[in-house]
Image 1: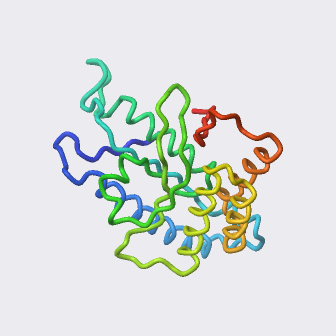
Image 2: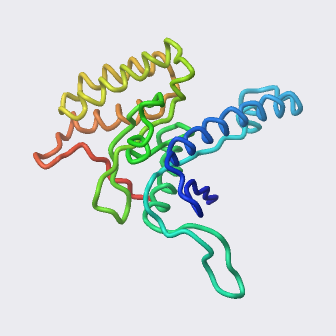
Length: 217
C-alpha cells in the first residue's frame, strides 16, 4: 500500500496536523475528480454510478518508525518500516469496515485533535498486537463548520458508544438507530447495532472491556 511519511528525512513538529490536512485535501480533490468522471461517463443507473465512483481509504498513525533508504545495492528505496507503519495500514483497511474514508489513531488525535472534527469510532486491537488503540473518523477541520446533520450524527453515535461500553445495549441500539435515521448508510452505526444485538442474546462475561479484536490484517 502507498505510504506517505511526514517528518522524514527531516523532523516536522506538527506532522500529525500536516497529515490530517493532506487527507482532507485528498478527499476534496477526489470529490472533484468524481464529479468530472461522472459527467464524462454519464452513468444512467445507481449501480452504474456506484461502479464509476472512485473511493479510497486513508489510515493515519503517529509513531516512531525506521525511515530511510532501505534495501540492497541492487534495489533500494526510501521508505519506512515498523509497527507504526503497520498500524497505519490496518487503519486503512478498517476504513472499509467502518464505512469512512479517513481513520486516524488516538496518537495522531492527541497531536492535533483540538483542530479537528472527529467521531470516536471504536477501540480496537489489531492482529498480532496486545495493546488496544482508539480510532477516530476524521470528519473535517474545525476551520470548516459542521452541518447540523453531522453534529447530530456525532452526538448520537457518541451516546451510543457510552451506553455500549456501559453494557446498556438496548439504549445503545436506540442511539445508533438515530444515527441511521440521519444517515441510512452509516456502516459504523450498523456495525454497533449488530454487536449490541449479539450481546443482548449472549451477554459478555465480566472480563469484557469493550475492545473489538480485528481478526484480519
